[in-house]
Image: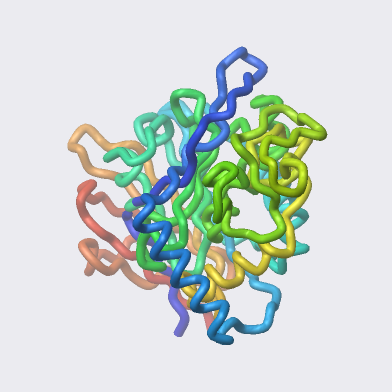
Length: 347
């Protein structure tokens, strides 16, 4: 019997210098909130990666299929929503960007939650952890893609593969809802905030990491870059080393319309990082489509209302964890509980 598991569950940042733009409403936008690792962590990961590449353990490149669970976290009144078509368009953007690198993304499921506090959370906050603890799905096998109304003009953020164990609920990416294709976060409205943050999720640095100093972004075929590029400054060259700044690269800070490439070196780095830190994802996961899952805002009693509805060909079996013994598809739970919905294939 195969089971789908829904956890009530968290997250880590990767970015640095903010690149600013403005949406159609005039709101200042920050390109990425992912924090750079500490020098000690960066050195340890670099040494581990170089030893792995030099040791002949790297497996032959293949197509890695990643199921994506989209979590649309709206305001209490249902605003800050996106359509299913926008989500499908976002998947198309990811597949167009990562196809060259050997990564394919498939739709695992879409759920919607009405919770203003979660939707407008700040990175590395208790609200972020509450949201992810409640919504994360099989992080070792699934890209959890959170669509929020992030505060302070932030477009998105993510965590590196080595930041937590591969099955930790903190993994995934978080993006501003209006950055999806068709949104109004111009000039960041073509879905490449998602592309950029997934790059961090798979182990890529910003192209301007370490500026003009070695080892840069630790990728041999991306020229050094002193600082993030804004807009689309063709011909920009900020370092004395060979090559103009990689302004067309998805891991820079330029406008969505300017971004259009990953390099072969970045593809190799993603493969190595996934093999090292996300081995279950590399091996391939048999992740079945999730049921329809809806988590309401807390009730007056402080409990969360959760409803799980099986997709076609599946049936609800039971709740496990802190909700063990409950047989109905709708349960109430405290915010600090961990409940697992178990589904099984129909005969």
